[in-house]
Image 1 (cartoon, helix red, strand yellow):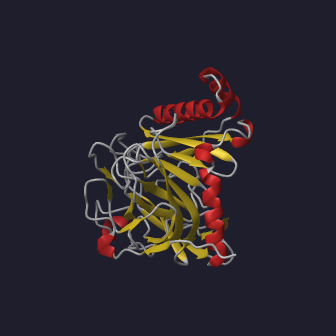
Image 2 (cartoon, helix red, strand yellow):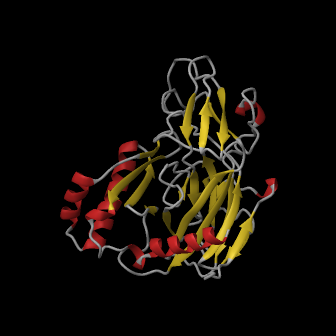
Image 3 (cartoon, one colour):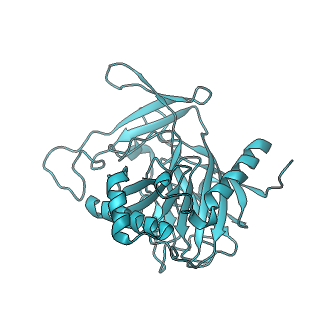
Length: 347
C-alpha cells in the first residue's frame, strides 16, 4: 500500500546560504507542516571552495563566511515551548571527494586565540579524500608518505539547530542550547533530534556534513562534504514534564542521548549528564538519585567537539535499561521511523 507523504525539496543558491542561527537574516527558505519529508542540499563547511591540496582555506575562503547552513525551515504551528522533532532519514555525500585541514590557531592540539602559547602556529595543510559512494568508503592519503587508509563512510551532520531564544544570534560555528555546531557523530541517519522551539516556526537549519568524524573532531575538521540529506520534521506541542527542553536531545533505536555545549569541557560534560539523569528520572518515575546511580554505572560519554567556540559533550544511555514503559513523546521516534521507511520504499 502506498502511503501519501508530503515531500518538499530545498536546494539553496549560493547567496541563500546562511551563517547564523537567529538574527532575522531573511525569510525562511520554505514553510512546511509537521510530518513533512524535507529533501535538502547542504554545502560543506568551506562553501565548496577547498577542492585540492593547494586550496588553503585562508586563501580561498572568505572569513567569517564559513560553515554555511541550509535554512531556515519554518514549521507551521511551532510556538515557543514546543519541541521540534527532526528525524534524519538519509545523509549521502553529494560528491566523489571531501576535504579536511589543519589551521593555525585552531584545533585541540595547538595554541589558539584563547590558549596562548609561544610556540609557532600549526601549519595549514589540506587533505583531499576520495569518496566511493557505491562501496561506502573514503580514502585517507597521507600528505608526507606512509600507507593509505580506507575508512568506512559514517555520514553525519555537524551542524543542526533552531533559532535561539531571547533574540540572540549565534554564528553557525557555535553550538549552544539551540543546537548549532555540536559536531557529534551521533547525528547520523536513523536518529531523531529534539530541539526546544524558541521562536514561531522554530526556524530549523542544517549543514556541515561529514563523511565521517572521530569523537572530539580533534584537529578541528572532519571529512567535510556537501550532502544530499532527507529529514522528517514534526512537532511536539508544549506541556509535560520534559518541556521546554533545556538542551538538544537525540534518540536512536537503542539509545537516549543528551547534549551539553559550553566551556570549560567539564561543564559541557556536567550539562549533558545532568540532562540525561533528569530525563531518565522523568521517563521511569525513579528518584533523581536512583537515576543518577544508574547513569553512573551504565552511561557513556562520547565527545562531540573539543575545538569550537563552545565544546560539546554527549551523555548516552541504552534504552533497554529503562524498561518498555519509558517511551519518549508517545513514541515519536518510532512513528518518524515509519514515515522514513515509507519514504525510502517509494523513492
